Length: 284
Image (cartoon, rainbow, N blue to C red):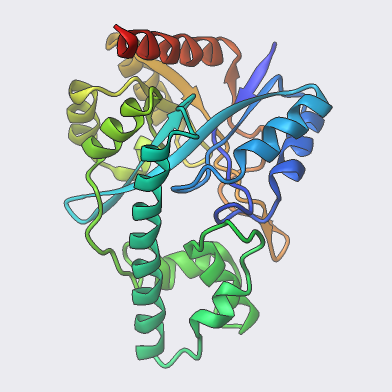
């Protein structure tokens, strides 16, 4: 069976593997296709595409856009966008500025908790010049200082939505992210819907214009995967799968390893076809 993994992060955002290293790992896992979906940036795509050509693995260009709905983080994946479109790149820069504000708020809250951490220490964890800072970078510093033992513990105690230092400044809505992706002739897919524990939200976004749902994810239960697979089928949406690979920190892989959540190559065909149809409509 030709398998694909459609959700991963590199050093362009908060992953620890470079785009090239991620592609090589995907190839070693026997995948036919692999998507790079960094947070609010497309900086790692070109390097991945070039390595994909060398390795003989198809690279699906993607992104994961951060949004907020009723105070909760909601992530929307985009695939096959015109990722060099100036307007799209300008909008992404605006999103990253909000991300920077969030990071400053997190650091401030940690300092208020008497945890000795600075933004300068966090910035040093960034591997790519073009990359952006994410919560896993902050978690790395907390682990280095012995405040926590793992990224998961850092999120549970401090950085996640129930954490002591959690911060969530105003961001675009999931609907606006869907529009942003579609304006760039991309395909919009809701990331890890099981993490939101809000099925009404999922239905709302389907009615708004989602093209797909991430059915298989390392943090989805079997029951959740079955539910979202059925939901996708009932609504004529593309069902995708992704490991949400972020690399390793302290020897522990956050979310899943490349290939831990996969689906058949048919999903890539459907995403590509949906993108082509979107571009055709744009030209009419």
